[in-house]
Image (cartoon, rainbow over all chains, first blue to last red; front, top):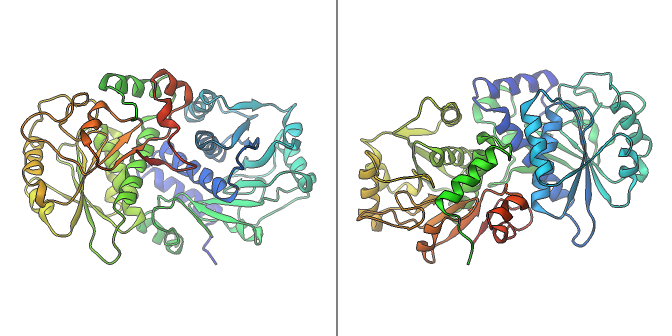
Length: 239
Length: 239
């Protein structure tokens, strides 16, 4: 069994990377999003000749930012056609704004609240990426996300597979699924380290990405076992 | 034959990526350096059990920055032990300063002018990475780099293989090797697109990396053929 990092420890590690660790958020988000795209491509290789749409559900914070980066890489690699649902933009954040411009330049289409449920139900939608909330999420889930998560929960059996980025959105980071309507991911991509809630994933595919932790930090946060799992020059590892 | 991008066009494309393209230098350098590390790992996979030192020759500009990023990834992947030679630091550049902190935190050692020739000659030095000058280089080559390049040129036959980042340092970007003492790379990693001087490489291994160009930009700079060469989710391609 792998080591997990509590919500509190994950937040502390993140702050440490960006202070004494001298990483910029641009760097870390680029590497995290790239790892998410790699895991998606590995677990669900696009079927040639098909229309392979991936709907990216993008939240207002860094989890959403990781999703924006992942969408860009997938689009550049070809095979998949990302579609963005990004209802709550933080326009004051220059990085998110820039990431969105990069996607617009790739002609990635965006859909709004009036279309999201219809598009999620389409035959052409082969995958759903849940990049709504990350390890700093605190309940309650506010509109329009509460309704979206209820929809994903209620219609689970007829929808395409869901890949959650770092945390299944709405889950308690340390305690797992809570409430009546919870996202049930088919694949989880943990970033830096799994969080405690990942143990409620069961036997579902679980990837680790975000290969930027040095030995000192790994030792301090007791995740040395994790950074040793990566093979060769791989950016992700299946746990 | 692949398309090349002149020094002028490469500079213009770079500016365009960071203005209307909305990319930050942090993002682009991270992806470029990662591609360099991937190409090195692919062309020269580390031999298990050996002491595999890689000496990174780091110049004062963005080519050096790409080298710093590549050194970090190689170190994190294991197998190779990067050693830095970085004699002309631009301390006013926060990104370069940060990249260096990230390497120091990985306990990557640095050597100075008094040691570089000795270290290049060591049996344990298995590879030399030339990240001195990129596509904005203009002659003459100033100290201490002139002496270093003369050393690399004169002692070529007894030194370990040289991997050049984007441009063999000191070469004219558009016209190739000039002068008495020129670096002769054993492998070239072109970033975004090969520059015209790459045609003087002959049959040596030549990789392309920096997979962040969208179709519009590729069309504008007439490098559509290049972005189609990448396979699947690969970050590099051998030309």
